[in-house]
Image (cartoon, rainbow, N blue to C red; front, side):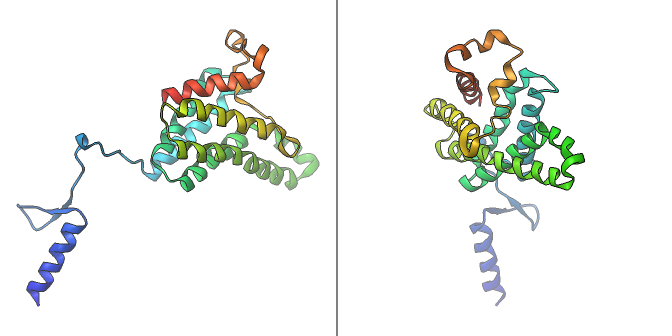
Amino acid sequence: GSATTGSSIGSWVRKYGFMPSSSARTCTLSRPNASSGVRKHHTSPQRLLLALSSAGLLIVSFPSFNQPWCAWVALVPWLLLLRDVSSRAAFSWSWLVGVVFFLGSMWWMLHLMPFGGIGAVVGWVVLSGYLALYFALFGLFASRFGIRHSSLVILPAVWVACEYLRSHLLSGLGWNLLAYSQTPWTTLIQVADLTGAWGVSLRWTSSRCASA
């Protein structure tokens, strides 16, 4: 009986990657060698920090904070987050980025409370949740394509397509397109003469995908 139990425990220990210590009757979790090429996965708190970092940087890129340089690094934490998650998780985390961004950048809707009361707050939250779906769609595509050299063309195009849809679908609301954050830097947005805001967003997103 005890021999069988010991054998079963030993098999379980070996199966789940625990190695017995030679100095004591304890078990330690075996870790992959850093040189083996195994990717380090982010924990949930780390992912939350990355998501909130991107949302916060996007928020301060626009008025009334007016820090356009933040837009140039805002996408990087988000793309790092999407590297090691499933498509479903990528959709959810990207939606969260969008919700926080739109809540933070459309705070002015709360000034409608004297007229709409609690309805203004509900509208603010629901509209932010709807607009965040376009962020989620981008995140879904990013998780499918991955951050590769080929995606340096595909992902920026997907981002611009999502912005275009957001600006036109269901009457559209092109609030705070990425290009708008760069208006203080007139030299960098001259391409808008030929391409409109979409060309500026495409250029910006391309550089951020390359950085990630």
